[in-house]
Length: 294
Image (cartoon, rainbow, N blue to C red; front, side, top):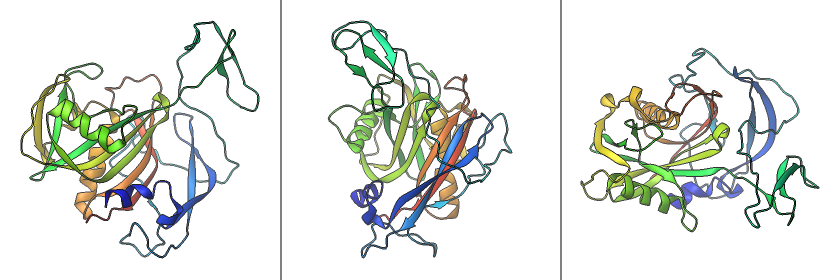
């Protein structure tokens, strides 16, 4: 089941493919966001099914409980325009070459459109790419396992067990490892639940639904406490990051109407806010797809 759920992220054989981009508008931070239209390919054996009668593609909707702190009533406007591709994040400045140690200069390399750090001695171009954060939303006896952070940022606040993916491991392996390191829990991955992009800070979160293999857990070196919370007792105002607030809100909303779906969304953080300002964001271009669990 897990492989069938993951395959649709990059395969046309899952029943749909993305084929058109159009600029949807500007949010109230002055950032642009892009709407992706989908068209069914109608493969013989769809990897994912949906409970609606629409073609096998994502169903787009706005989550009413996920709003910006500065403008809770903000909504997206819809208009057609030419696609615009630009980064809203701020990359760190690279002053020295990571290969030879020589000084760098910032120029646009031939055939590219973005300014890069180029070594003045060896000519190496420095490329910076987003970080992948992987973790688990662990269900046990109708409760969710959370960890209280013992490190900065967001010291003393609650989070799902999650962290940076390592070279040489898959997303699921990273999520399982991070859960063991932060919560001392052995888990079984059930299905992917959410991919949340945060362009401003160059991070992408991939969160998996998981089950405890044994009912044992304990805080690791980066956690001061681990606890199972009933859905009504989740400490929403003491969560560590906007990504955790969005993930848990989407999960609870799914349970109210049936069962968890797979979600994709772009978390646009308000520039200049700290990680612990968890309400300072908008959730743009939110898509949901029914998850088929064996």
